[in-house]
Image (cartoon, rainbow, N blue to C red; front, side):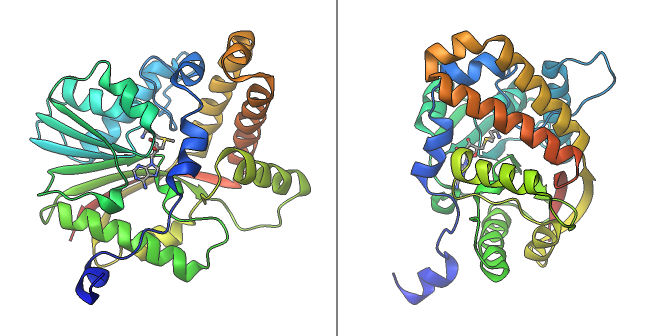
Length: 294
Ligand SMILES: C[S@@+](CC[C@H](N)C(=O)[O-])C[C@H]1O[C@@H](n2cnc3c(N)ncnc32)[C@H](O)[C@@H]1O
């Protein structure tokens, strides 16, 4: 690598492809059992006691897409597109002409390929390797947690996040928007033993090589590349999302066990219920941030 290449394209420091596959390539059939019909795997935006998970996910997709000013756009990028819920929303509800989705999971890309037409360009590709002319808007939901790793120093995390914001800036015109949703580290206070045990379980068994960023990291790393337009912190929305997923998985436990085995199902129930507890105690937060490119 030449010096100029290393300056313009710093090394990626987030979760590796095998670490991502460890989670998302458990198989489409498993996740289909407990996610909503849009297969959205990130916190929903709830409204009222009678709401359904599907409606709350659509509300979230709409909030983030309109926040990014994606409506009617020619080209929109979704970084960490999962099973394509946002891509489909952009094309079908926001009249976007062409969407590009990036994922590190081959089984997610394969699942989108079963229904997507030529308006959809889905790639198994790390955003750090993505080359593009430009986009009208960028969206990323529930993926930023994978862009640095547990155990990194703050300095290194900031470097990793600055690289991400720098790439997004390069792909947008001035005034272009990035809508980012991510879990964040919660309030600093002594953690009780149960919370520490549950956090370690998630880091070791469910999401290896990932980390929940403090809000201050996100703000500091985006300085000089993006202005913050709006921020919401919605931990209670993730309590309800996780508990709804857990209830559905419990109801369909036997089917799920026949797909991935009893141990994985039990680990996932534990992860969803303990995540709900952490959002409830505010050891975790849920940030929805609309940025505008400087
Ligand atoms: C929790 S899922 C969220 C999926 C989707 N955004 C949603 O809300 O349903 C995280 C996604 O980020 C993707 N991902 C993680 N690290 C990535 C990277 N470095 N480049 C591209 N995608 C990445 C994973 O493959 C997965 O699709």
